[in-house]
Image (cartoon, rainbow, N blue to C red):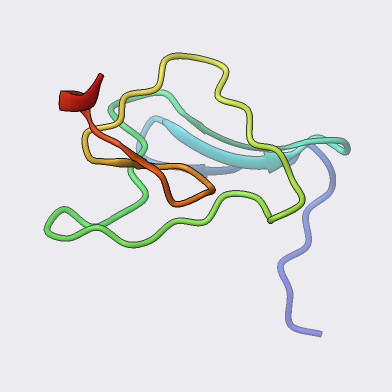
Length: 83
């Protein structure tokens, strides 16, 4: 089987100073970034990102900034001007 298999808590380190790491500790999975922003898109155009599943819950454990329109599950939209 073609796979890179690492034991729990064996990080994949990326960058000259290992600024970014991907690992699983046996219970949870992590992507950590020590420098700059962690971006999930291209610099010239965004891509759709799906987090979770229709039956899961996503928790934002810090501040959240929405620069576009916030669309709620019922397709209701909320813009900054409306607040």
